[in-house]
Image (cartoon, rainbow, N blue to C red; front, side, top):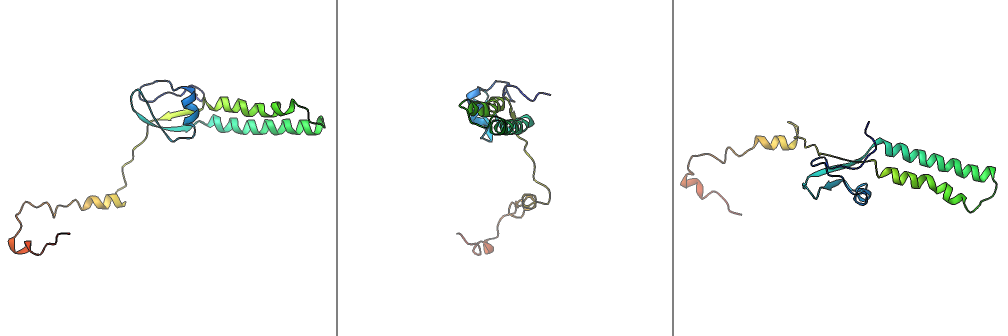
Length: 139
């Protein structure tokens, strides 16, 4: 269960800087400067759980300050924002890099149908007749 940890290049194992990791959360691909490997960026399930936990805890804190204290004090705002700051720091450890998966097209797809027309009728080793040479058009 390796959900939290530093972001590591899947090709060479180089650890990614936290500043770069912060920017990776919104990008789809990462190119390693050391090995030039391209990998996909995704978030672990811990990030989603931490987001819901931050929202729920800040909501409970707001309800506590509104109904139990019945007045807003100056330190209530930082206390309500604290779960979001903690989520922000935890989300840096939830970014993962994965090698991309290249899938072959299915047999019945358009790309598969194009493979049938490889141009065998055009790659004949027979010479072109001179009488049919005039029938061809040049665009």
